[in-house]
Amino acid sequence: MQWTRYWRAADRPVEAMHAHFTSHRYHRHSHDAYSFGVTEEGAQSFRCRGGAHTSPAGTVVAFNPDEAHDGYPATADGFTYRIIHIGPELVAELLPRPPLFRDPVCRAPALADALRDLHTALREGTALARDEQLVRTVHAMAAHVTPPRRRQEPDGDPTAARDVLEAHHADDVPIEALTGATDLSRFALYRAFRSRYGLSPSEYQRQRRLREARALLAAGVPPTEVAVSTGFADQAHLTRWFRRCYGITPAVYARAARP
Image (tube, rainbow, N blue to C red; front, side):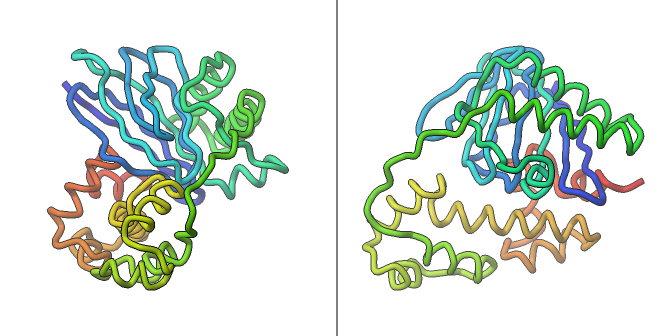
């Protein structure tokens, strides 16, 4: 049986999930946060940075902000894991130079212990205990990661195309608007965009819509209104993609920070 327990702070960019999945497959997506957790039982697999990875029990899964990835059970028995998302602005308050994870899977017992303790504190501890564990975890993270090597990117700058999608994320943007903004052919644009952001332009736009949906849901806007204002066809369309990318429904996310 699959299950999820989700928690998020009402006053700061911190979220946590404890889940067991046997058949759920995450669609390729990214988070605007440091996302890292511990696989407790079984094993999970995913693709990230152009390669395939597997996280068996006891290992730490680590994604940098905006790092695209998917995810699925590595075996028929599925996997259980705890994952925490911490906004980069919060990490920047604690570290002079926020770290970047070099490897998406690592064996780091001290970091794994800190993550488990933080997860418990977020759900059960006092505000002071949560802050103390957060500081401990961020510093453990910095001690176990090193900057990644810079990848060679294809010719062409997709930044202007991304800016168009950011400004018009709820609109039906034609490909001509993106090629016109970058002076790249369709093929060159797709290749450069995917290399830079880890997502195709359409996936990036959907991810941007989902992030806006999360902000509106957290502010108490009803899911039906959220779906329309963020460019989804209807609430069912929003729910389908929300679950594919985050493993929970919009309703669960909206309730998570309520007292």
